[in-house]
Length: 302
Image 1: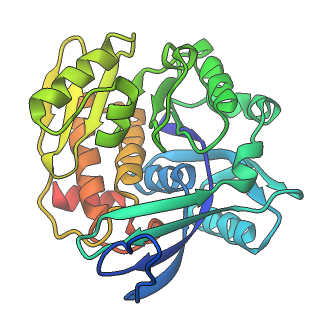
Image 2 (image 1 turned 90 degrees about the horizontal axis):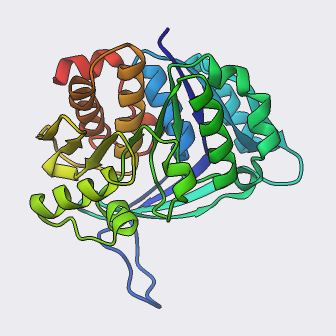
């Protein structure tokens, strides 16, 4: 069917670039400033849509200028927003990434309306989740909302992808409903308590996650690529070599492209290769939404 539903966040990103991160108490002159649509849920929805999926978004925006801009953008991208609510009591979420000279980032987020996403909001979107091939979740909305969405998906055999970001502890009740988990290095360390600095360490951590009952573990390891682990596959899939400008939405590009590929019926190993390509392209541009590649761009780089 090629359908993906994303339950997740909206963050309006206020992005600064600087030579380095300032020290405590230091005022540092930066290089540039930009304002971009972002948030892990929104980024992954746009990424999946550009990668060729039919996408529906479930989430909450503020009833404000930022919220209106998101709805306008999603309309342009062809993403269904029937289950996006404009909150009259809470503003649209805001993210404040700082990008250093190497392209690495640190981000502060103020979730606002995202944290008001409720059990009832998810139930209103039950038909969309049930009718989808893939459900994508992250951790910028209440865990109860993710839990309810995963329960609906499990009843209808919708594949559940959890991107456990921002890094946090995930309840075992939710993990038991997840088919694929896609943590990066820092998120893996929080979930497992194990380091991931070397390939062998990453492999050990992935096996621990697999032992929790998750069918497929995909560790995104930056320039090292992605480590794919299932009961039948254990493989490090190399990254594409690109010039890094901004890593902000690399993981979101990866997850969106992965979801779209799996919804198309592509096997997991090939889907991870496609997702690696999407993630690589995303780091070559500044900002979240502008960096998310199209299906055509992904095909060219592979």
